[in-house]
Length: 158
Image 1 (cartoon, one colour):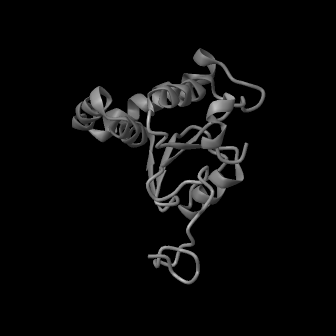
Image 2 (cartoon, rainbow, N blue to C red):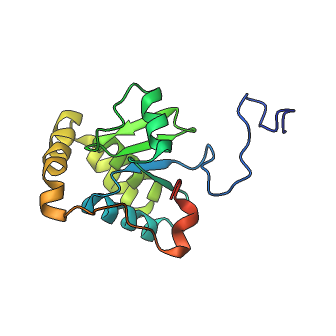
């Protein structure tokens, strides 16, 4: 049922643009100039057969708005985020990685369950070790690379 405001009756306007995330499309917020982060995005694109995920770089206005709503620093590029429900729910660091693996399904979901068994402090410690060394090990781009044409409709604010 569509409300008079064009939305779904819950105060939010519906979005006719298929590239914009709906409530069922989580958005991955990632450091667009990080080599590791871009490899992660490529991994998700390759395994996301249902085109479930949308993507936005942490350098985008879209990401800044979501992070500011959660009182997070939009200039802190050391964290990967998984945003649901139009950015109302936000998973960070290892929880974000586990959420992505869970949503990919299959063997990846089983790996997510196994990772969830580890203490969060240990998972986030490991995440931090990798995050601090990611530019040195995986490189850094001068600017956010453009995705392949076939995937561009899944990226916000190119």
